[in-house]
Length: 125
Image (cartoon, rainbow, N blue to C red):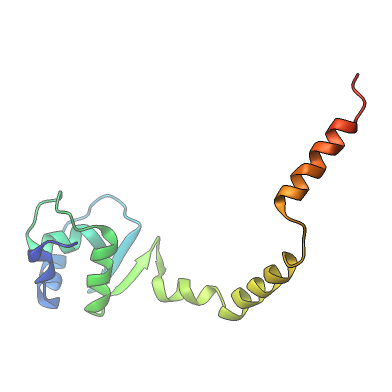
């Protein structure tokens, strides 16, 4: 759960913090603010004025940035583009194919018992 100061952030706070924030280590989650790609969590923590050990995690910071309408990226890709890569029709087709595969098949217990019989019947050297 984000701290109270993080929860009280405004879009203006984040934009002002983006101007103050200097480069930092590479991050998986970033936000594009005024043409600069900045790490999401450090940006939110800077805007709130809280220390780096604040309990706010990256996913909460990303949610805050999305709520304010900022362009959020994961490993350089737009989050909305990453979701578009997986077509819902392809997922549904995969689920349908898996449903049919396991209907009417013998149980795992019976399969295991059959394996034991086969191993038991093999001649030993």
